[in-house]
Structure formats: C-alpha cells, structure tokens
Image 1 (cartoon, rainbow, N blue to C red):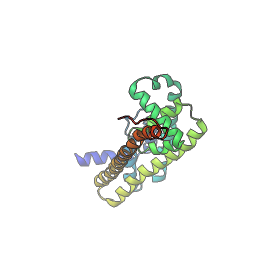
Image 2 (image 1 turned 135 degrees about the vertical axis):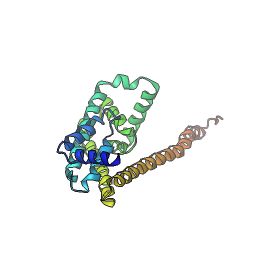
Image 3 (image 1 turned 120 degrees about the horizontal axis):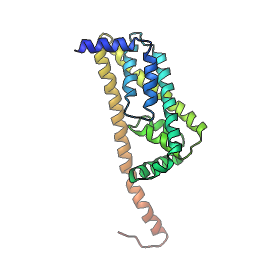
Image 4 (image 1 turned 30 degrees about the horizontal axis):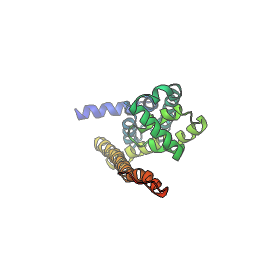
Length: 216
C-alpha cells in the first residue's frame, strides 16, 4: 500500500501539471481554508530534493497562488462588510483584526499567515475595513513569498535528510510544520494571559489617579 501511494505521489509530483495544481490549491486556500495548500507545498518540497519538481518553481507558483487567493478574499471582505460585523464571533474577530491593523498596520497580514485560521480572517477583515489595496498588496507579497519559501524548504530539507525514503521526509516536514504552529499558538496564548490583567487593572488605576473610589 505504501509503495502504491509513493508511486502515485511520485507520478503527480513529476508531472508538469503539478505547478498548476500548486497554484490552484494555494489560491483557493485563500478564501476556502479547508484546502490543504501547505501540505501540498511541503510534499512538493520533499520531492524537489530529488530534482523533480523544481524547487524554485514550486516556491514561485505557490507564492503567486497565495497572493491571488488573498486578493480574492480581500475583495470578498470589501463586499461583505455588513455580514462580517453581524454576530458575536464575527463581530469579535472584526474588532480584533481592526485593532491589530491599527497597532501593527499591514504587518499583521504577515504574522497571521503563520497562525492557524488567521490568514483568511485577516484578509477578509482588511477588505471590510477598506485597508488601502496598495498597502495590502505590498504586505501580502511579503506574506505569500515568505510562506511559500518556508513551506517548500521545510519539505526540501526533510527530503534531503531522507533522500532514499520520501515517506520519512514527509513525516519530518509535517512534524516540523506542526511543531512551529503549536509553538506559535502557545506563545499567543501566554501573551494573551499576561496582557489580560493589565487590561483589567488599567481602568482601576485611572479611576484611582482621578480620585474616584476603586470598585471590587
């Protein structure tokens, strides 16, 4: 079974159509995040260690696909501002993204690329708040390019480490990507916990300085 799967993957990855497939997956993932574009890019990177597909082309088409998909998401956000504001969860996400944009500007788009579920939420919200398209395109170019390089190289180095056993190379690549994602989430969680007391104490300190009695 494993040999049959490996043969199938090899046939797919050595086909010239693989570049079109990578572009399409990365683009669709921009507005339909159920598509496993990162998995496809990592897999292509593993096989690129053998010479086919070409690593540079894998990075290029993946970055272009992600760039195109993010712009579709941005345009959806521009036309759906009312729906994005409605509802508790949607409203909270909209408020968070708006605040993050105010604090970090377009760099939030680069950061969100490596947060599970963050990419689509931010691109939609940037469209909804009418973030300037030129600025969006600039930072999205950085985000898409860095993501493509990161994903392809994780697979490529996994493939080099296990040149004669691509399955192990895939497992290593996926393991590294998962570890990075988990680490990112843990850091975000810890930072949220540290900042929460500061937000709660802020109004109390302001009241105390103004001579008003503390509550609680």
